[in-house]
Image (cartoon, rainbow, N blue to C red; front, side, top):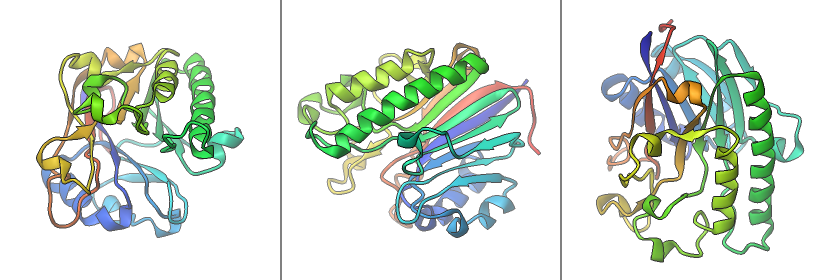
Length: 268
């Protein structure tokens, strides 16, 4: 079995970050499978050439100006799914599913929501999570090896924010949001980072406006969740801060989360 790097990264506009990401992949961290969120473009505008030049096969579920998800893989994509047959999941381009070897990866960009729990944005987030949970439960009945990863827009525990008192009552840290993420995990998933590092603070998002990256004032809202069969193969997982600590070109407000998993296949 070979070690395979799987990363999730909210890029906050792929066309604005493509040079930075390509440099990261080429010179710093050549991950095998890169799952990106918040592309902010349709597939026709996705800059495929730099990724193809590095040996990636690309699958995109894009949306003009908003949302959008993609998978770039050096391992062959056996199957790609962009539509899920559930209105709340298909309303916006927030999901893409790929099958690689005997494993399924579901790349998720969860709605941001709102701190006002009567706001339609919050209700949409709750409905999205309910539908996602039902979908993943059914997926796990078919596949033993499942990874659900992406920007979940929820910090689950006090350790997942730099100061719980500051975040109390804020979007992304509401009890109602935490309950939905826990319910998703309870269908048979594990939080790979917390499984490896139960007591370690590590963040994946820092506010641009406060320059929080330089004081490590962030939130852990990006996850790699996996079933038992994948967790058993997970060698390590970490946040790669290289892209986030760039001043030029302007970075995303997120950093990639990178897991190292034993898989039987090899690169193309």
